[in-house]
Image (tube, rainbow, N blue to C red):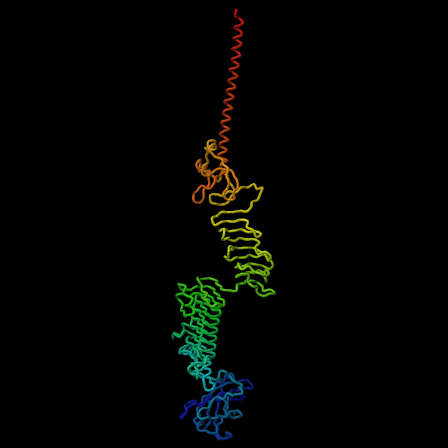
Length: 615
């Protein structure tokens, strides 16, 4: 067997005064036939002194059946003579396979330089080669923290978790940035990547705006993290360590992520204290509802569960089960446990608060108007016509030179007609349809002066429905065959007379006597002065109440002229019956007269015969 060895590192000599056991850890590598050795080998180390290492300090130390894995080995040894050496020492390595008698010395000796009583492992500032992370590392082998420093101050601290998994720390905490940054005792898996400064009072000029509110970063709950900035907090600082775990502050200043799985991405003076709540950025904002989100802006409150706010001054009210500070208190409470859950609130640049009024709302305050369009087109975003504009297309209808100030909203498509919603201004408010040249082609609007709903076409009012339910039609069609009536439900219907709509059918007793009592009159209408003829409804009502129409208050309103046809039919039938009776009577009189005439003739004949016989 051919073996060679190459020294990788010499570990540390520790102690002062009396040197403890296993002062050195000697690590190296072996090759067998040009490949990393594998198995167990006997090793021998000899300590030499002097400028050339020619003086043996003690008998060689032999180690039997040393495990070699992938060519690597490690030896712990006592060298009590080394601390007394001022000029350094060398180690000579020899190796043999188990069971062999001859030792093979490895060419070259390894220098060991002592520096006081501490001899560090040699890591080159120019980089290291042939290292194995299983043996070669910077750090600690016990449960102590590991620190890197700059300018003598801690810049990075890596501390093991007190919670063990299979005998080893479950995770580590990493604290970077200011030496004043901290992770609370007992917290595990936490990270502070950087940022932070000592308290502002530690500076010569604490009134300097750059440090007036400055301070260190702190993680108080397990698995929390802070990316940077200063005076940021991840966790709720209650000492429970897990009730606000996984909280994250990305950066910025004076931000706090206090809810479990909550996040503040940045900005300043922001708070996410709801479970899974998020503040993207901005300032003076709070997300206190579960899974609530502040999209960015200022003075915002996402108080309801699953609510979203953005812009300026927008508030989704918080619930009784949420913790709040000034940013949400200004919006008020919804009075229930969940706040105004599921509510979206966007506020424009105005400073006044824009507060939700219930759950599952979509609220937008946009004093410059709102536009919804599927394509920007060549002119970019469409300028709102009125406050709210929906455009099907890329640009909508060309903006008129003098837009109608009464327009609240419009619904358009490129070059085509649109629907306008008018504000309650003057007498005009409603829904109008129009085009680029004539914005008032037609539609429905309410007219205040006449207190009626008007139906327009071609800019003119064609029909008007008053608040009392009176329908006014400006014109009617001609040559129609179907008549219309108003039924008992005040519906416009065809004038039906089928048996299937009727019950309790009996012969009408009204006839000639009622017709003879009707008083036909001529008159003029008070409205318009038109001359007319007809009856007086109150007089007809005295004859038979079934022949008049009453208003909603029960007052006599008009005559059912179409019902008079039934009365007239009865009168005609009555006259016809009388005429038939007189005809029968006349026929009977004629027949009787004929019989009498015959009888008279016979009598005259008999009289003539008697006179003839008289002597």
